[in-house]
Image 1 (cartoon, rainbow, N blue to C red):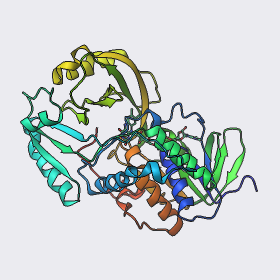
Image 2: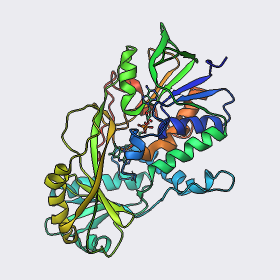
Image 3: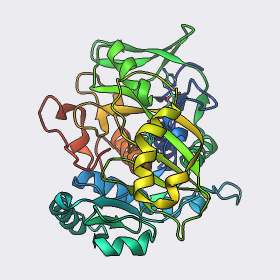
Image 4: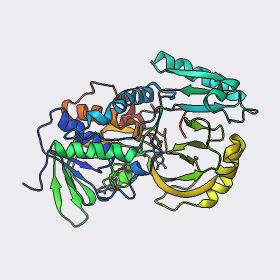
Length: 388
Ligand SMILES: Cc1cc2nc3c(=O)[nH]c(=O)nc-3n(C[C@H](O)[C@H](O)[C@H](O)COP(=O)(O)OP(=O)(O)OC[C@H]3O[C@@H](n4cnc5c(N)ncnc54)[C@H](O)[C@@H]3O)c2cc1C
């Protein structure tokens, strides 16, 4: 029976591991196997993420996912402790700040109202208020900003490890091997075939393979509009320290920056062709990021780049949001990918809710049906204005 399970999860990143953990934590008694092809998580998106968590969204579903997940992250270290040893996730509630030019303010005001109606403590800041948060900020071209003090950033790798260790503790079986393809029989999923030809069987297969997930799905004739999209991050240092720690700050140009320890990281939404590419380019920092940073905070003028990396978004080309639930034409085949740039912060809610859907056939904690697979055919896209 070694090749039989009740649930197979493809991909042991933050999403697959959160689902595995929640299934077992919430009482699922069957065998759960997680296949992970990259045991060191060298290329997985989770450890390459910027670690930002925010609630400044413009759709109710994203606000709900982030709000729920933030409550979990607040208590994550203690709640996930094993044998008294806490999981240190470097949780920093230093705020999330979108800077605004004059023409952006009416939209931000609209977003603020919707966020406040949904229990999110965001504030619309006027130009001079920005200096209370970042005293060195150059504000001449700005009119204000949208700010949420509760948000911030954390260490995604440690969160992922917290879920992995706890899923294993509860009996999840991690097998470090590559899934080659899905095994199906007409409209029922049957299992997976490994790269070496071995087969594993289960009535439920959950595809959490991140940037590789749509390729696997497409191979089985079950397409979804998701592509791997490279995104770079750069770490730099400066000579003259800032007076305060930064919130995760989004410039109107789309360049974001935050503290990383006593140093800084920054990135931007580069226009680049989809594909699997892990190269990072110093020139991208010099040409596209540094001019913005230097213009915004004088201390950044002599930014010294120390390192960079590139990771992959599982980029949903239709509406840039997660795709969650059972594939309508394939019984037992569940998907959880397409998160684009905001999957890390949604992992706690997604794990909890997908576990409910898989076990009971319906959502209980949050209704995630707006993110269903069928929304593309039904033209019910979830259009989020605040996505980068
Ligand atoms: C540069 C960058 C910055 C980001 N910043 C943020 C941010 O600030 N905030 C935020 O919330 N999100 C951010 N994200 C997005 C976030 O990282 C992802 O949404 C999230 O990590 C997705 O988790 P995952 O588990 O689905 O994917 P992954 O972490 O990639 O895990 C998927 C796993 O599946 C495995 N796998 C794939 N194919 C197979 C196969 N065939 N067989 C077996 N295993 C397989 C992979 O090896 C991988 O480990 C960022 C992403 C990038 C790249």
